[in-house]
Amino acid sequence: MTWQGRVAWLPWALLLLWGPGSWSLSGPNSTTGTVGGSLSVQCRYEEKFRENAKYWCKKLCVWKIVETKEADREVRTGRVSIKDHRANLTFTVTLENLTEDDAGTYWCGIDTSWLSGYFRDPTFRVVVSVTPGELCTPPPPAPAPGLLEGSQVGMPVAGIMSEAWSKL
Image (tube, rainbow, N blue to C red; front, side, top):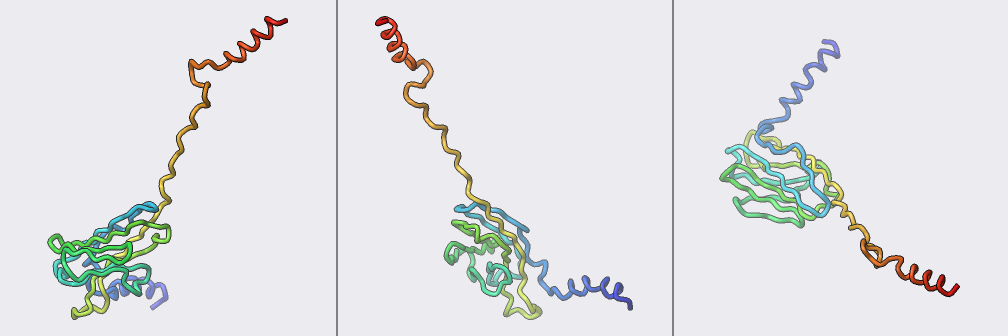
């Protein structure tokens, strides 16, 4: 087999290695929030994972940022919360008081450590972008006193000039 032939089957082999549950979880591919604001991500899962713990992690998922093991109870870790809505097979992760450092690649995940047939947890990648806060445009400066339309600007000068001319 030539190297081109080997390369042709490689993506299919890697796809098979991805493991069961790869399509068991879905959500938005990306989301955007504003510095100081908040954003929420809703991840959808299959019925067979209703009782499993759900979690949210960043980058390589070495550690979980927040995890929930109960239905309809919000769990919070710092500025991040998670809530499993088992009735509609979704869980929602909310990031509050966003900073630019919050931008990056995150993962919705389902803990399958006790399920046979799963050698890795089903996860779904979500790219989070954080934009700078809205710039407030300052209001235009207030006009200087006496420069408003219909004001008496120039009257004192005219009065001084009139007085000066009358003395000549």
